[in-house]
Length: 316
Image (spheres, rainbow, N blue to C red):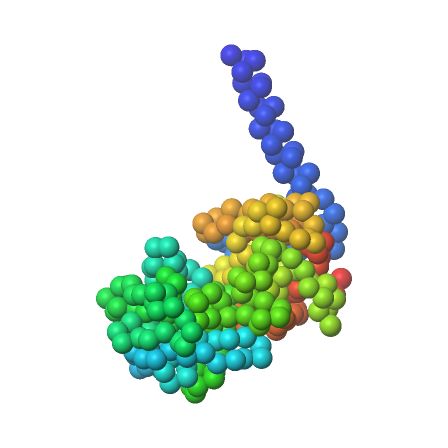
Protein backbone atom coordinates (compact mmCIF):
# COMPACT_ATOMS: atom_id res chain seq x y z
CA UNK A 1 0.00 0.00 0.00
CA UNK A 2 2.79 2.40 0.95
CA UNK A 3 4.66 1.49 -2.21
CA UNK A 4 1.63 2.44 -4.40
CA UNK A 5 1.13 5.70 -2.48
CA UNK A 6 4.81 6.63 -2.82
CA UNK A 7 4.74 5.89 -6.56
CA UNK A 8 1.63 8.05 -7.01
CA UNK A 9 3.25 10.95 -5.17
CA UNK A 10 6.37 10.59 -7.30
CA UNK A 11 4.35 10.75 -10.56
CA UNK A 12 2.46 13.85 -9.39
CA UNK A 13 5.69 15.53 -8.33
CA UNK A 14 7.25 14.76 -11.71
CA UNK A 15 4.30 16.34 -13.55
CA UNK A 16 4.52 19.50 -11.45
CA UNK A 17 8.30 19.62 -11.96
CA UNK A 18 7.85 19.34 -15.74
CA UNK A 19 5.39 22.24 -15.81
CA UNK A 20 7.62 24.26 -13.51
CA UNK A 21 10.57 23.65 -15.83
CA UNK A 22 8.50 24.77 -18.82
CA UNK A 23 6.90 27.82 -17.24
CA UNK A 24 8.99 28.91 -14.27
CA UNK A 25 12.17 30.07 -15.95
CA UNK A 26 13.64 33.33 -17.19
CA UNK A 27 10.83 35.63 -16.18
CA UNK A 28 13.17 38.42 -15.10
CA UNK A 29 11.69 41.91 -15.35
CA UNK A 30 8.84 40.55 -17.48
CA UNK A 31 7.27 39.00 -14.38
CA UNK A 32 4.40 41.27 -13.21
CA UNK A 33 1.97 41.17 -10.34
CA UNK A 34 -0.70 38.99 -12.09
CA UNK A 35 -4.09 38.34 -10.57
CA UNK A 36 -5.87 35.04 -10.95
CA UNK A 37 -8.71 34.85 -13.45
CA UNK A 38 -12.02 35.19 -11.67
CA UNK A 39 -10.54 37.36 -8.94
CA UNK A 40 -9.03 40.05 -11.12
CA UNK A 41 -10.64 43.41 -11.74
CA UNK A 42 -10.82 44.49 -15.39
CA UNK A 43 -7.50 45.98 -16.47
CA UNK A 44 -7.18 49.71 -15.97
CA UNK A 45 -6.73 51.38 -19.33
CA UNK A 46 -6.12 48.01 -20.89
CA UNK A 47 -9.19 48.06 -23.12
CA UNK A 48 -11.71 50.61 -24.28
CA UNK A 49 -15.37 50.54 -23.35
CA UNK A 50 -16.80 50.21 -26.81
CA UNK A 51 -19.00 47.26 -25.89
CA UNK A 52 -19.03 43.59 -26.72
CA UNK A 53 -19.89 43.88 -30.38
CA UNK A 54 -18.22 47.11 -31.39
CA UNK A 55 -21.34 49.22 -31.90
CA UNK A 56 -24.15 51.00 -30.13
CA UNK A 57 -26.66 48.14 -29.93
CA UNK A 58 -29.60 50.50 -29.42
CA UNK A 59 -28.88 52.15 -32.77
CA UNK A 60 -27.93 48.89 -34.42
CA UNK A 61 -31.23 47.30 -33.57
CA UNK A 62 -33.03 49.74 -35.88
CA UNK A 63 -31.31 48.32 -38.96
CA UNK A 64 -32.82 44.85 -38.73
CA UNK A 65 -32.41 41.98 -41.17
CA UNK A 66 -32.67 42.79 -44.86
CA UNK A 67 -32.73 40.74 -48.04
CA UNK A 68 -29.42 40.21 -49.82
CA UNK A 69 -30.76 40.52 -53.37
CA UNK A 70 -28.19 40.23 -56.15
CA UNK A 71 -24.83 39.61 -54.49
CA UNK A 72 -21.77 41.34 -55.90
CA UNK A 73 -18.04 41.64 -55.29
CA UNK A 74 -15.97 44.80 -54.79
CA UNK A 75 -12.19 45.03 -54.78
CA UNK A 76 -10.58 46.43 -51.62
CA UNK A 77 -6.87 47.25 -51.55
CA UNK A 78 -6.64 46.09 -47.94
CA UNK A 79 -9.07 43.17 -47.98
CA UNK A 80 -9.12 41.88 -51.53
CA UNK A 81 -12.40 40.80 -53.15
CA UNK A 82 -15.25 41.40 -50.70
CA UNK A 83 -18.81 40.04 -50.97
CA UNK A 84 -21.59 42.63 -50.84
CA UNK A 85 -25.37 42.74 -50.99
CA UNK A 86 -27.30 44.37 -53.82
CA UNK A 87 -26.79 47.79 -52.21
CA UNK A 88 -23.02 47.41 -52.02
CA UNK A 89 -22.83 46.81 -48.25
CA UNK A 90 -20.11 44.47 -47.00
CA UNK A 91 -21.18 41.00 -45.82
CA UNK A 92 -19.40 39.37 -42.87
CA UNK A 93 -18.85 35.97 -41.28
CA UNK A 94 -18.39 35.15 -37.59
CA UNK A 95 -15.63 32.83 -36.32
CA UNK A 96 -17.90 31.46 -33.60
CA UNK A 97 -20.38 30.18 -36.18
CA UNK A 98 -19.98 26.83 -37.93
CA UNK A 99 -20.37 25.93 -41.60
CA UNK A 100 -20.64 22.14 -41.22
CA UNK A 101 -23.36 22.07 -40.14
CA UNK A 102 -24.41 25.69 -40.71
CA UNK A 103 -25.16 27.33 -37.37
CA UNK A 104 -25.31 30.92 -36.10
CA UNK A 105 -23.95 31.78 -32.65
CA UNK A 106 -25.04 35.44 -32.88
CA UNK A 107 -28.15 36.33 -30.89
CA UNK A 108 -29.52 39.02 -28.59
CA UNK A 109 -27.39 42.18 -28.61
CA UNK A 110 -25.04 40.53 -31.09
CA UNK A 111 -27.86 40.20 -33.62
CA UNK A 112 -28.67 43.90 -33.20
CA UNK A 113 -25.11 44.93 -34.01
CA UNK A 114 -24.72 42.26 -36.70
CA UNK A 115 -28.10 41.84 -38.46
CA UNK A 116 -28.58 38.57 -40.32
CA UNK A 117 -28.80 38.73 -44.11
CA UNK A 118 -32.09 37.23 -45.29
CA UNK A 119 -31.75 34.28 -47.64
CA UNK A 120 -34.97 34.84 -49.60
CA UNK A 121 -34.32 36.05 -53.14
CA UNK A 122 -30.52 35.98 -52.86
CA UNK A 123 -28.67 35.50 -56.15
CA UNK A 124 -24.97 34.59 -56.40
CA UNK A 125 -22.31 37.07 -57.46
CA UNK A 126 -21.37 36.74 -61.16
CA UNK A 127 -19.19 33.69 -61.79
CA UNK A 128 -20.06 32.04 -58.46
CA UNK A 129 -21.86 28.69 -58.34
CA UNK A 130 -25.38 29.11 -56.97
CA UNK A 131 -25.00 25.83 -55.08
CA UNK A 132 -22.79 27.70 -52.57
CA UNK A 133 -25.83 29.66 -51.41
CA UNK A 134 -28.10 28.23 -48.74
CA UNK A 135 -29.92 29.16 -45.57
CA UNK A 136 -30.02 28.40 -41.86
CA UNK A 137 -32.53 29.27 -39.20
CA UNK A 138 -30.97 31.96 -37.00
CA UNK A 139 -31.61 31.93 -33.21
CA UNK A 140 -34.46 34.45 -33.67
CA UNK A 141 -36.11 32.30 -36.38
CA UNK A 142 -34.84 34.35 -39.34
CA UNK A 143 -34.01 32.37 -42.49
CA UNK A 144 -30.43 33.57 -42.80
CA UNK A 145 -28.33 33.43 -45.95
CA UNK A 146 -25.33 31.11 -45.90
CA UNK A 147 -22.40 31.03 -48.33
CA UNK A 148 -20.55 27.69 -48.38
CA UNK A 149 -22.37 27.01 -45.11
CA UNK A 150 -21.25 30.21 -43.34
CA UNK A 151 -24.08 32.47 -42.06
CA UNK A 152 -23.88 35.99 -43.51
CA UNK A 153 -24.28 39.30 -41.64
CA UNK A 154 -24.11 43.03 -42.16
CA UNK A 155 -22.56 45.41 -39.61
CA UNK A 156 -24.73 48.18 -38.20
CA UNK A 157 -21.82 50.66 -38.13
CA UNK A 158 -21.28 50.41 -41.89
CA UNK A 159 -23.14 53.50 -43.11
CA UNK A 160 -22.46 53.44 -46.83
CA UNK A 161 -21.46 51.04 -49.62
CA UNK A 162 -17.77 50.20 -49.40
CA UNK A 163 -17.55 50.55 -45.61
CA UNK A 164 -15.90 47.61 -43.85
CA UNK A 165 -15.80 48.88 -40.26
CA UNK A 166 -16.61 45.40 -38.97
CA UNK A 167 -13.37 43.86 -40.25
CA UNK A 168 -11.52 42.19 -37.37
CA UNK A 169 -13.92 43.34 -34.65
CA UNK A 170 -13.35 41.28 -31.52
CA UNK A 171 -10.90 39.14 -33.46
CA UNK A 172 -13.90 37.13 -34.68
CA UNK A 173 -15.66 39.12 -37.43
CA UNK A 174 -14.31 39.25 -40.99
CA UNK A 175 -15.48 40.43 -44.39
CA UNK A 176 -16.55 37.48 -46.52
CA UNK A 177 -15.33 36.54 -49.97
CA UNK A 178 -17.73 35.32 -52.66
CA UNK A 179 -16.90 31.68 -51.85
CA UNK A 180 -17.63 32.07 -48.12
CA UNK A 181 -13.98 32.24 -47.05
CA UNK A 182 -12.50 35.30 -45.35
CA UNK A 183 -11.69 38.03 -47.85
CA UNK A 184 -7.96 38.32 -48.52
CA UNK A 185 -5.68 40.19 -50.93
CA UNK A 186 -4.72 37.83 -53.73
CA UNK A 187 -0.98 38.41 -53.34
CA UNK A 188 -0.51 38.31 -49.58
CA UNK A 189 -3.50 36.21 -48.60
CA UNK A 190 -3.60 38.15 -45.31
CA UNK A 191 -6.44 37.04 -43.11
CA UNK A 192 -7.78 34.37 -45.45
CA UNK A 193 -7.72 30.62 -45.54
CA UNK A 194 -6.35 30.70 -49.10
CA UNK A 195 -2.95 31.68 -47.73
CA UNK A 196 -2.78 28.49 -45.66
CA UNK A 197 -1.21 30.54 -42.86
CA UNK A 198 0.08 28.62 -39.81
CA UNK A 199 -1.78 28.88 -36.51
CA UNK A 200 1.02 31.14 -35.25
CA UNK A 201 3.80 32.64 -37.34
CA UNK A 202 5.67 35.95 -37.65
CA UNK A 203 5.80 38.97 -39.91
CA UNK A 204 8.24 41.84 -40.16
CA UNK A 205 6.58 45.06 -38.99
CA UNK A 206 8.26 48.26 -40.26
CA UNK A 207 8.12 49.88 -36.81
CA UNK A 208 8.23 46.97 -34.36
CA UNK A 209 10.39 44.42 -36.15
CA UNK A 210 9.45 40.74 -36.11
CA UNK A 211 6.11 40.18 -34.38
CA UNK A 212 3.94 37.11 -33.81
CA UNK A 213 0.67 36.87 -35.77
CA UNK A 214 -2.24 34.43 -35.60
CA UNK A 215 -3.78 32.30 -38.35
CA UNK A 216 -5.58 35.37 -39.73
CA UNK A 217 -2.43 37.48 -39.84
CA UNK A 218 -3.57 39.56 -36.86
CA UNK A 219 -0.98 40.89 -34.40
CA UNK A 220 -0.60 38.90 -31.17
CA UNK A 221 -0.21 40.73 -27.83
CA UNK A 222 0.73 40.15 -24.19
CA UNK A 223 -0.61 41.91 -21.08
CA UNK A 224 1.96 43.17 -18.55
CA UNK A 225 -0.39 42.41 -15.64
CA UNK A 226 -0.41 38.70 -16.49
CA UNK A 227 2.00 36.17 -15.03
CA UNK A 228 3.80 33.20 -16.62
CA UNK A 229 4.47 31.23 -13.44
CA UNK A 230 2.07 30.58 -12.03
CA UNK A 231 0.08 31.18 -15.22
CA UNK A 232 -2.46 33.91 -14.44
CA UNK A 233 -4.48 36.35 -16.51
CA UNK A 234 -5.61 39.76 -15.31
CA UNK A 235 -7.79 40.19 -18.41
CA UNK A 236 -11.35 39.09 -17.62
CA UNK A 237 -14.95 40.08 -18.35
CA UNK A 238 -15.18 43.21 -20.53
CA UNK A 239 -11.44 43.11 -21.11
CA UNK A 240 -11.82 39.89 -23.11
CA UNK A 241 -14.36 41.55 -25.38
CA UNK A 242 -11.61 43.84 -26.67
CA UNK A 243 -8.70 41.45 -26.14
CA UNK A 244 -9.85 37.96 -27.24
CA UNK A 245 -7.64 35.06 -26.20
CA UNK A 246 -5.58 33.24 -28.82
CA UNK A 247 -7.11 29.78 -28.95
CA UNK A 248 -4.89 26.67 -28.64
CA UNK A 249 -2.57 25.97 -31.57
CA UNK A 250 -0.91 22.64 -32.37
CA UNK A 251 2.89 22.69 -32.13
CA UNK A 252 3.17 21.42 -35.68
CA UNK A 253 1.07 24.38 -36.86
CA UNK A 254 3.65 26.98 -35.79
CA UNK A 255 6.39 28.66 -37.82
CA UNK A 256 9.23 30.80 -36.47
CA UNK A 257 7.89 30.97 -32.90
CA UNK A 258 9.54 29.73 -29.69
CA UNK A 259 8.11 26.37 -28.62
CA UNK A 260 9.49 26.38 -25.05
CA UNK A 261 6.57 26.76 -22.70
CA UNK A 262 4.22 26.44 -25.69
CA UNK A 263 1.32 25.14 -23.61
CA UNK A 264 -2.42 25.60 -23.29
CA UNK A 265 -3.64 27.68 -20.35
CA UNK A 266 -6.91 26.24 -18.98
CA UNK A 267 -8.35 29.44 -17.57
CA UNK A 268 -10.66 29.35 -14.53
CA UNK A 269 -13.35 31.07 -16.65
CA UNK A 270 -13.48 27.97 -18.90
CA UNK A 271 -11.58 29.38 -21.89
CA UNK A 272 -8.47 27.72 -23.27
CA UNK A 273 -5.67 30.08 -24.21
CA UNK A 274 -2.42 29.57 -26.09
CA UNK A 275 0.82 30.69 -24.44
CA UNK A 276 4.41 31.29 -25.56
CA UNK A 277 6.99 30.70 -22.82
CA UNK A 278 3.88 30.28 -20.64
CA UNK A 279 2.72 33.89 -21.20
CA UNK A 280 -0.99 34.12 -22.20
CA UNK A 281 -1.59 35.49 -25.72
CA UNK A 282 -4.33 37.79 -27.08
CA UNK A 283 -5.38 39.66 -30.20
CA UNK A 284 -6.91 43.16 -30.21
CA UNK A 285 -10.44 43.96 -31.36
CA UNK A 286 -9.27 47.40 -32.49
CA UNK A 287 -7.03 45.86 -35.16
CA UNK A 288 -9.20 45.76 -38.26
CA UNK A 289 -6.86 44.20 -40.79
CA UNK A 290 -3.70 42.08 -40.89
CA UNK A 291 -0.71 44.33 -40.22
CA UNK A 292 -2.57 46.61 -37.79
CA UNK A 293 -0.86 47.24 -34.43
CA UNK A 294 -3.40 49.56 -32.84
CA UNK A 295 -3.07 47.77 -29.49
CA UNK A 296 0.66 48.44 -29.18
CA UNK A 297 1.45 50.23 -25.91
CA UNK A 298 -2.22 50.68 -25.01
CA UNK A 299 -2.61 51.72 -21.36
CA UNK A 300 1.11 51.12 -20.93
CA UNK A 301 0.21 47.45 -20.42
CA UNK A 302 -0.38 45.84 -23.83
CA UNK A 303 2.45 45.04 -26.23
CA UNK A 304 3.07 43.03 -29.38
CA UNK A 305 4.93 39.76 -28.86
CA UNK A 306 8.34 38.81 -30.23
CA UNK A 307 8.98 35.29 -31.59
CA UNK A 308 10.61 34.53 -28.21
CA UNK A 309 7.47 35.56 -26.34
CA UNK A 310 8.93 38.88 -25.12
CA UNK A 311 7.12 42.23 -24.93
CA UNK A 312 8.15 44.44 -27.85
CA UNK A 313 8.86 48.06 -26.92
CA UNK A 314 7.83 47.82 -23.27
CA UNK A 315 9.77 49.82 -20.69
CA UNK A 316 11.72 47.61 -18.31
